[in-house]
Amino acid sequence: MSAELIIHRAGPALSVQDLGRPGHMAQGIATGGAADRLALMEAAALLQSPKVLPAIEMAGLGGTFSVTAPSRFALTGAPMRATLDGEPLGWNESHVLQPGERLEIGGVSEGVYGYVTFAATIAQPQWLGSVATQAGLGIGQLLAEGDTLPLTGDPDPEEPPRRLPKPDRFKGGILRMMPGPQTGLFSTATLQRALATQFTRDAAANRQGVRLNHDDAPFPADEAASLGSDFITQGDVQMTGDGVPYVLMADCQTMGGYPRLGSVIPDDLPMLAQAPLGAPIQLQLLSQEDADALWQPDSARLAALRSKAEVKIRDPHQIRDLLRYQLISGVTAGDDLDRDDA
Image 1 (cartoon, rainbow, N blue to C red):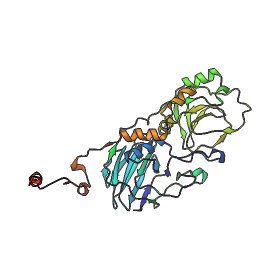
Image 2: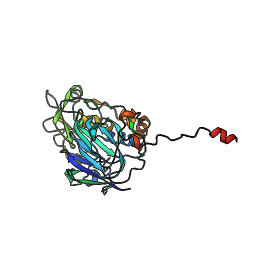
Image 3: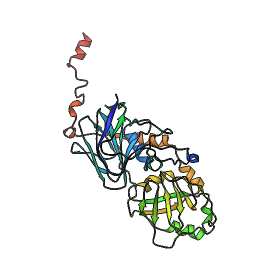
Image 4: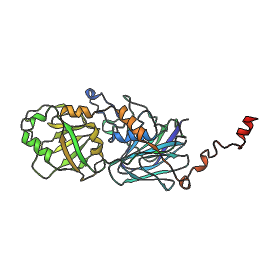
């Protein structure tokens, strides 16, 4: 059954995101996709989907939504205040949205990017295999009040609600990075000082990059005076002309001339994306071998999350849609065995 998702109210930065468009850097197209890829995998696990589904990414503030056909949905990423027809909803859990009901998502309580993912998949036309919005490249646009999105049918609307443990990636932390092609342009003293510095997440942060603030001297790359433009990618730690590090994010450009201290491993980018203003950040350098050993395919990560998504046991007094469940399955007349022996 096809359906529509209706947006009755939209925060200032709502967009459709999936895992992006890898493999097109030569054409000047960044991978893009969700700022917090792990949140999309958590949603797929909660919905017991074998693949990652498109989601609505909400930066700081959510919106109000309804559907024209029943659909399960998952709330993941940065926790936000959410209600269904006024009843509070748990975060990092799946729920069901029925026609006529209103899903209200407010502001974040921690972190930056929240996500709502529908089991009745958002069915926008793909471009280069993705529906991800990259507004800076003119690919898609931010969602607004009154917009409608086509949905496919929920493949298993009777699947019970599930929950995952609350993640701990909304307060900053250690960013592990591997050496890059220009790490050697920084002196040993400069590199060691950068690794020992306690940075904070600056106000200059968006889907293109995050500036790391610090109070001490800049970090020059003494051998980079004649450095030519080179390819750059998500995770690269660029040192700008004033010696301040920026970590490139999902919608970064694909060419740049600033020297790169290293590249943050993919596992730690969700934590940086979700770090709020002023959150502490520290860089840690891994060897290439150690970084490679930490890598795992998305399929393995999703399988692990699916195994952790437990069925949510609910209090019957708090189940709004109790009457739509089959409550007498298995009831018999009580004389089955007597009749079998007759």
